[in-house]
Image (cartoon, rainbow, N blue to C red; front, side, top):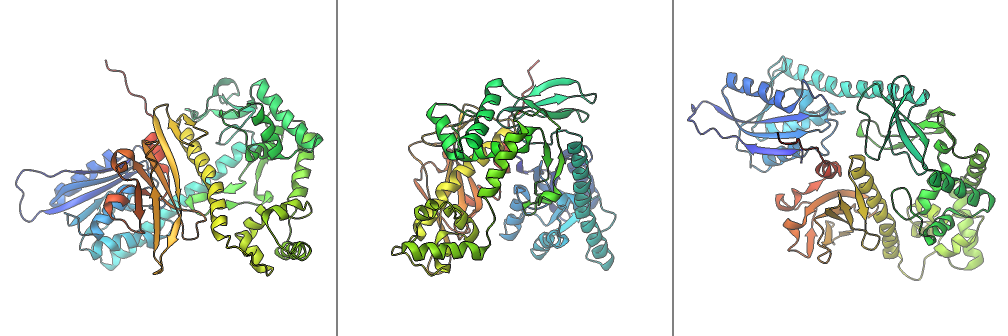
Length: 524
């Protein structure tokens, strides 16, 4: 994995005046100047001049400095400092940007303060000032922290502008092609070079990617979906059920689902339009759904495989079906339904075509029970457990799909057992994904109970711990069977000590890095 910590004790005798130090190195994408080896060499030269003995190295390779998520070595360093395990009195870092390009300069200062409070000084070896706490160094350090964060913001702006320009010229910017389409690699003169397989990326900066029609049987299937939806007025769920009954699979070899059919019906790439910036996730901040006036588009950029008239007809059906009601409108209709029926349930709501679906009420108000409370309805039974179970059933396939996409985006091959949902990566490594419900004790502390699948014995278990409301993932644990297989149940608290929390991550990028295959050079 990208996280590294190793001992570098020097067995030679050293003067008592020398200071034991750890060094922290990080590489993101600055492969030349900021490679971990170059940083380590520069820090070693600094240490030799300043009488430091480097006894430990913490290295985060291929990690962004925008936040601390995924930077396991920095977390490990801070954890060692906080818990008194640090066997050094100084930390050497190449410069402030390697410590992090945090968008909030105070975050960078906080992590340094944690070290300083424990009596461990942080030295920035390539900065033009001494980090000695003097007013001048404090001012310079603050400026450099802001500059480090501003570099990322400025780079993000430039990259985004470049991507928007390429989209407007009709080139594809990232993401899989989708069912019925394929990605074609072209050179700077527009000549075809190759068709990109899933997980493959261009290797030359001057190359570009466009979408082209896929195999004829897939193109015909897409047109059939539009016919069933527009002409025969069948729902997405009905269409998926029809295809599954015939044993047909998607281009990924999976069963058809309502969401797959809906995506085909709603994506403009099937009529040749190139649309970008529907969703923003800049600088790893909050995911934002942008309004249509912020989209970047190039109409007619690709060869269409669906008649525009069919696409627009489908869009009108979807728009009418998803017509936006205000909260008051939705609650009024729910109250009227309660008055006419005397009780409420998801099935009763979904029977009324003029009303939003039960799923719409869950999405708008958080749960059906919350919507019931707002109209003064109290079910005879306590349905909170049922609502949570319903949410977990919907959440698990979403997480499985997300993990599958993450592995495939790094070039991995993933198979899914439809009976057990067990993932097989590269045809050899098995991965189980378990969503773990959160419980609150009477004292207000949070607890999780993870049951390991001792029958399947997966090589890796991905435990997805939910937040206190059991609505979304709080964090993840990547648990190797060789380490935890002897235990059928793991009882987890908010903090579990290094024995268990060493496997904890904020997101699954370490998993994707772990499962990424690299070519092995042939021996001479």
